[in-house]
Image 1 (cartoon, rainbow, N blue to C red):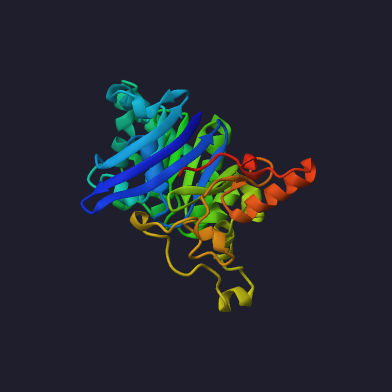
Image 2: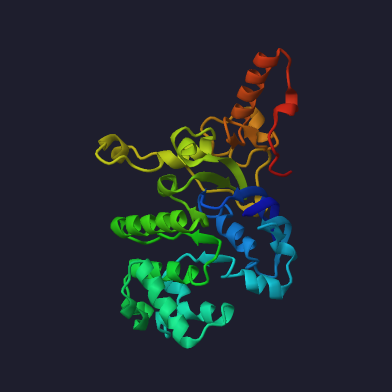
Length: 342
């Protein structure tokens, strides 16, 4: 359904060029959910904005973004307008900031239906009522303004809006941000049910690895504009092969375990400034198991198990050793999986 190949995004600023994405490769299949996780500033929102060409004019984009075989980056504006909402829709981060505060939510949900499906006002109103019921809201709430709804209800409105034109692919950027745990669970369950019942493709962006592990089929971990690990969600979460993935999972406290409360685990510092990336592996200055070669080694994705890969020299060494054992000859770089980008 969606295939992203060697996607690179560079922002042109007054102080120079800032690389936000550096050779990202991802794919989404119908009926499956891809989770993209990483700290703030790792390029997650830039990635999803690039899929629908929502980036500012200062962004230079290269690579390919194929939606059902058609390159989004090469589409005319007329074709792109038809694909947005009807083919690919997005649930933006922060529903309160995405909804028009002076317009009733029913009208906001109806807008893409009126524009893309050329529906009458009566047909659009019926569709709005159906969508609200589908996301667990009474149809009467169509007359409410955004400030009259709770955070969870506003998030459900955003999901209803994303479903308005029956798209094949939905992108959810931090869909549970600022929601309490009960509402978060309800929203996540709703998203899972919609994907399963309508055979949709879904991309969920989050910084919460545990949330993604609970609803996603596949997981991609991003750091400094690159994918550093990817594979089946349960495997990536339960048995991480990259130190950054392991650190993300360890950052969450264990309920009922006083040791995790008294000795919280995490990473010191912040992700690097994209304009001043360290040499070698971008994660090595914060990595608790970094080796000398990490400061100079080129970052690549190595095979790390069935349908898995990780950009870590430790994985590279283990791959080479296992290949040498099975063949009796060293493999060098021939054991490499797909490279991220220079």
